[in-house]
Image (cartoon, rainbow, N blue to C red):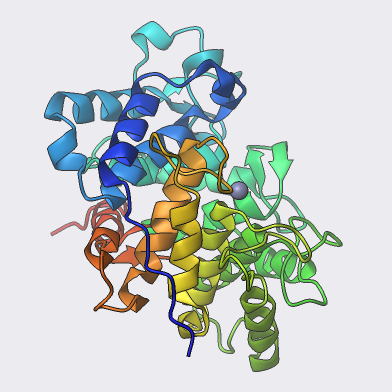
Length: 366
Ligand SMILES: [Zn+2]
């Protein structure tokens, strides 16, 4: 019997230092990511949370200033209310107020999803959230074919990422009334491929990231009289996902025939968790690959030897958190790979999702 290589240590303190540095001062090489600054805040704050150090490694002043910055990106218009990526397009960022009416500076559906999760991680009370406005915004992003654009009235990209974010926000609100769920489900079906995965759009090649988004959205949808996936469809999806794990490195591929990449450990690994097929994945080799992508000065890269970024750091830690309970408990250094329970459907710690589900819906009248 093969003896597996011992798991390398998780460089917790180096990753904490990397993420704190990224939060304070993103390097110039990432200036192209300015249009998704809200998402980068989520990856950084989420990394500290998955590592279990948010309360000990950051001050109350830091956490308050991050909550304040997120709410400064909250805008309103005829499309409803939501969050924009950052202040870069705003003419009034220095004196921004919540829900500043501004038609030229619309909210973005992915940034709204990452803002809500970041606020839940930071234990915001959501008293400033305009629920009807948020529902109206989600409805304004849906297209005739059931897909969702990233911005209202057909603005920005239209693909499964936006659809997943819309379903996730509706699920957190406990209200799907402003969108056409069945039309969205039929759009998801049109993205399914012969391999059992899903492409970003109809007729696109299957990709592990969009396969996660499709499978998670089907699970987040309100219950239907029949399962959203037939047994044959579910088995085929599982089969494709399991074969996306590279037998040599343990990492996951995004597409058939491509090299493994740490972020796909999350997308493929989380999709298998949602399908209830997590035991079919080799958790030791999976974690070994993530360990090999750690950069020696902190942060996690897409492949071994590359430079890290907040996106791959967060998704790698989240992937490790989901599969840590499946590692051999007797393994030396296992303790460094222990994490709080993680929710693969919403993509946050279980306690964060509980906080969000209790406070994001409209407060109950007594
Ligand atoms: Zn990647």
